[in-house]
Structure formats: C-alpha cells, structure tokens
Length: 395
Image (spheres, rainbow, N blue to C red):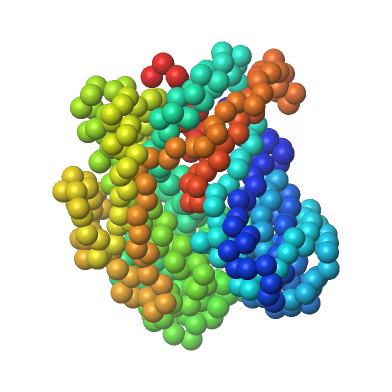
C-alpha cells in the first residue's frame, strides 16, 4: 500500500461554520487552496502579501504539506478578491465579526487515492469500506501526533512531566525525532557529540530556529535548564506535552478496549504504533457497537476523574509501565503550558465512507489503486482510517 505518491492522492477540504461569527465585521474570510505548502508557510505568505503582521492572519486548523488542501483563514484587514502565491491561491468569500477559531471547525472531507495494491487487495478494500462505515474503528491518535518522539529515548513531554529539564532539552536540541527533516537530524547528530558547548552549538544551529534562543540563554546560564525549557517556542511547548498525553491515551484506550473484544471472542488485528501494538477490529456486532460508540475516555492529566473503574484501572496500569503517578501528569516546571483537559470518543465512525473508484494503477505497473472518500470530525486521523480499510475483511 502506498499513499501520497503525488499530492493529488491526498485531497482534504475543511468543513467550517462560516456564519458563526456573523456576516459583517473587520475580518476578511479567505478560502485557501494549497499544494505542497504547510499552513504556516501560507500564513506567512498571506501576511506579506497583505502587508499585515503574521498575527493578523489566523487559520483555525493545520493541514498536511504533502496534500492538496482547502482551508479557511481570517484576516484583520480588507483584502482583494483574490490572492495567489507559490502553490496556493486565496479567494475572498465574506466577512466576520470574529476570527475563525478551532470551535468553528465541523470536520474534514477526504478523497484519497491508495496505490500499489494487488487486484485482490483492492477488492478487499471495497468490502472493508462497508465494515468501517458500519462499525468504525478505535479513535487512536496516529503517527502525525508523535513527530516529537525520539526512537529509543521517548517523549520530550514525558521528561518535562518528570521534571528532568536537562533530559527534555537534550531530546529537544539533540534527539533525532521522527518528524525532524534531514538538516535538523544532521545538526542534532553534531549536538549530541558537543553537548554542553553552547557557543559552538549556537554557531551550528539551523537558521532560523528556536534552538538559537535556547542555546544563547544556556551560553550565559549553563545550568539553568528550567528557564531554558521555558524558552522553547510557546506554541510548541503545549504540543510537546500533548504528544505524550496522546500516547498515554492510546495505551489506556487499548487496555480498555481489548477485554471488550476478547469477551465475545472477536478476532483482533494489531496495528504497530511507535513502540507498541494497538488492537484493531474488522467489525463489531450489536449491541457492543451501540454501547462502545457512546463512550468517551478522558485525556490523562493530574485532575482526571473516572466514572468507569475500568478506565481508571487501564490508566493506572499504563502509568505503572511508564513509571509515573497520576499526580505527576502536570507540567510543574513550565510557566505557560499545561496538559489540556477533555475527553475523546472511544470509536471513530467515518461519515459517507465509500470507495469511489477502483482500477489499474497508472503509477505502478501491474498493480491496482482505489480512491476512497469519507468525512471525519475534527481531531481524527485519515491515515488511521486507511489502516482500518486495509485490514483483511475476513478478520
């Protein structure tokens, strides 16, 4: 199976409540179509084109770089009907009294082409699409959430929670995370060999990057690791914490879900995720499906309360493996970042999940491709749906 062979294989359109802020106001609303650009790159381009500060351009969500993505932005300015730049275009669609916010997102519509399948596998995808449409799948966080994970070392967020400030900095500045581009990986290989030589590391650090600000402080305050951790980019610190919290949620959820599947002797498939295997299923019978789709599980943090003892038991088992206590799930060393509170549904049921087409693959000889379409709520992962669709439909 191959995805994202070309950007047009991954098409996503943001579904947004444009009327929520009113039809009049100082914020221009743009419909932005981008290709092979990050949302933040387009944000910077729009700000430059409109002659406004970066903070005046707001996107309620982020979209993948390797995709053709349609999303919405609000700008505190009166702009032209149309803007265009490197691999993006923006069309004015209205005005609002308030900027778009994550709460205005209603979901995402995906049209994805999956390539390099055998004809038999392509037939299986069509059958499995019916199972996924009916029974859904576990609503795990997928690998995009874990770009800060350092293989063999773990999460920066965990080190922060353990109050290991130097360990957190070492992973941030010198740990080769799975989401790091090649130039950053090369720099981090150098950094681990010259750890503590802050002046030299400043000279070698990528430009521009937050690394330089952190290293400049360490050069003048070589052992004040706590203050240095707090100098990590403010928008990044919460993401580092959330990545580890999401990892804990996945493990807790897998422990909670597995007994339900085993109790009725339901065939279990397994999905590799970082250093763990998470249980999946092909289909769920009634009434188990009706019961599980009503359940949401808390995001683990120090103040988590449990209505279901089985959820508490699952989290305690995970924390024991992680050598943590529930009370430690609070970022006490940080001044402006914390683990979010909230809940996440146990199951993800895609809307309008169907195979649009199936046929010969024009990129891989003697292979097949399928084009699948579905709608997901905010915060869910299209790549996870593809993994569920790729399960053998017979279980």
